[in-house]
Image 1: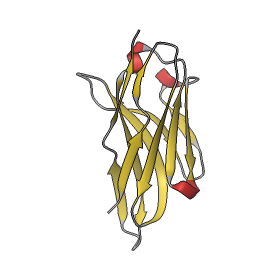
Image 2: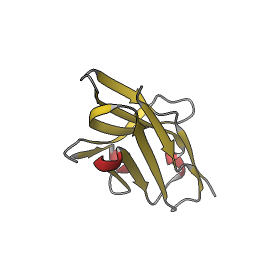
Image 3: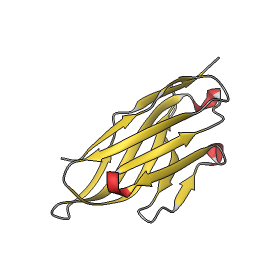
Image 4: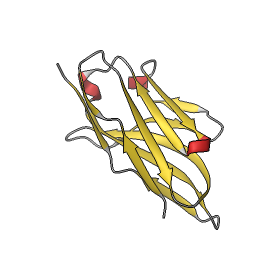
Length: 120
């Protein structure tokens, strides 16, 4: 069974930085796209950034120039470096990964979420 384990959330002051990690575990043949989403209180879950297996990236306009998504394919891990954080970045951040398992069955899995709070 494919599972995603997130870490790195916490409380940070405006202008500060955090780095989130998302490790994919289980029997995997390939991980294609990995992504980070976030959900603020009272709002729908929204896409933050995506990265393909070939490391092409895409960002929401609200985080361009401040957030950087990356991945380590050898470790089946994605990262989200968040700099110059703003109070409006406060949300639960979720990792998503899509790929294929041992028998080429597709998977599309989510992490449990990690809280990021930006406040003075």
